[in-house]
Length: 142
Image (cartoon, rainbow, N blue to C red; front, top):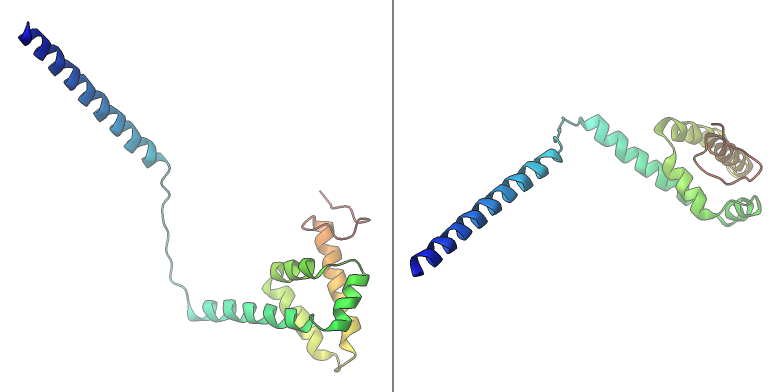
């Protein structure tokens, strides 16, 4: 009787071990399906510098827009400071370069109106593209 019980216990242990082995194999195969290939590339010094310059230019523009008269004008147009920051963060390098070129060409003190007009134009374009929804009368192009 004891040998029958030992044999039954031994069979159960083998089945349990086999089942656990198959389960672990299935889990390893399943996790292998979701792995992604890592890619690496050389980053040139110019790319790093341009990225840092872009971040610096965005921070500089945000600082310029912190002036009280500019902030009040944007609020009167219905644009919150958070929306301005979000849009500045979304500017591409070429858009930011254009904006800085126009700011540098304007004489000191008279550039606020031009800067505001440019920002409203950028906000209007991003509304048309459907990126933001600042102006309720602008419907995004689909």
